[in-house]
Image (cartoon, rainbow, N blue to C red; front, side, top):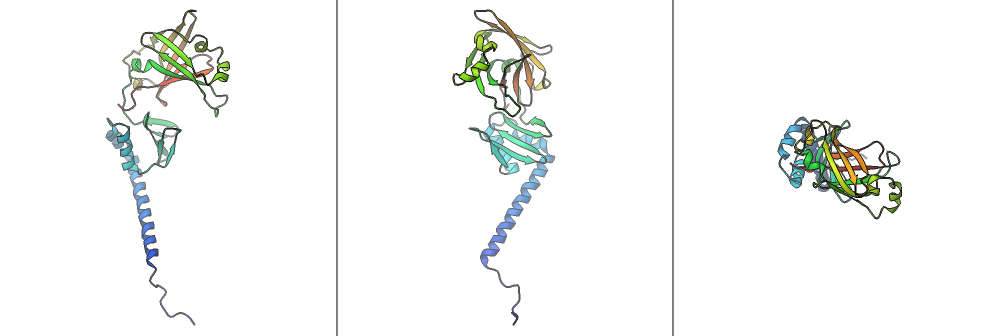
Length: 248
């Protein structure tokens, strides 16, 4: 015999709470999506809000606008990402936040990096990978001092890699002097931000001591990575250093 009671019986309380929780989750997702769409339409507003702030404050602004990150990566350094309208917003606590879409990268902090301030200091040498997907092993450090001297220190842990760099100028002649000649239209006061990507910043002529052997390298502006990059005809290594000011 059919049950005469109505079908819309009272549901258990835990069912109702579960549905309410699901509704809250959907509402939260909707709010985040709406916020991200709105953010995409007011890109300049985020840029304006984070200027003059340091890393922790910038991260708080991004999370307040976009919610928790969609992903993280990095080894020893936590780098967070948010997926925004076909692009990715990345927060790097060292080099700053940037937005990347369609192969183009836009750095969000408005910085000032004079060429003369960035040119000197610590450059990192890495072995060139055998293929595009290969590892770039750290080899050592080149130090350019303002007194026109240089010093190269090879990483003692990379003994095997040293063989592949046997003919490298810096392995053969780890210390000496350097002559800096800025490119046409460039001076020590020129902002790196104002130079075209891939343009010549300066040529560096290294003179080894005591042999007086010489080697010339070009230093190129790389806006994508915010680095100064060594260039020469045939280098068995890669060499670069970061700009100096990431947060101002």
